[in-house]
Length: 345
Image 1: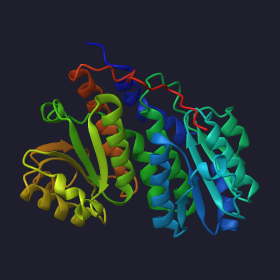
Image 2: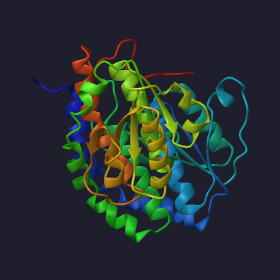
Image 3: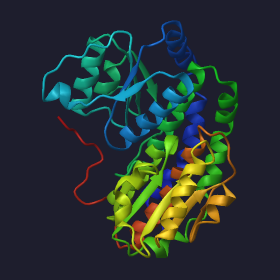
Image 4: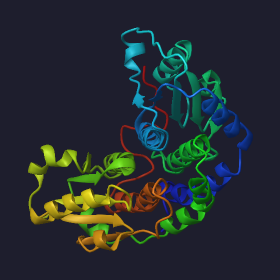
């Protein structure tokens, strides 16, 4: 059977990331030299959908590696309420596949008018959003025809990781980035087929992670909704214990991203709590201690770097989502009611 466009495009991601990392070195050097010379007092992000998950990953990197407080700017503050934004010397980052949404353009224009240095990470550099920015980082993802974004999302994460690595001049992370395409290729071939019978008839699930992997959990949950019509909700492993835990009953499927970083011990503690309450744990991890807790093991290639390992979860997940949609009688390339380009105002 011919693979869906979603699956084909997800499989291209390692090559597209290699293209990204080989390009635009002078531009990245110029941006990061400016950021080191005039350290921004704070940073803001503005995006929608999968791109918002990407910039949330970027927020974790900026805060954990540079200590610069980063917040998400709500476009409706500008488009609905007409507010002006006072942000001199701040860094404003947007990520978008198409760069066409009017609300993102209006918000980004307001951030620029308020004094922010603006960086747009877009697949269409000549788009309205791209032309507004002080600096434009092409995603180099190539055409993406499936409605569900895959390779463009993974390229967005890689672009943000490279930007931050150069900004803070983290040599270890820069070395790891050079190995990222090969590690992504290994993740793309990870066998997650054991999840198909578990999620094949599921109506609802949770996707649980913490820290830098939480935005990836948000992306996985969105794709389960979008392509598989599963009511999937993402939760921080910490927030799960504050109320959503009451939803757990015997056999309830919970997808856990147990990344081998500083959050692992806490995520494993939550996993044990969920297992005690009868949840069916599907665990994506490189850690043996995590996989030993799983009823359904979702293996990954060995750890590369704590900053980059969250990307492995999503690279391994996308083929599963495409196949799961087909198994549920759905077309992952054309989810009902959705368009490839969404223009909100």
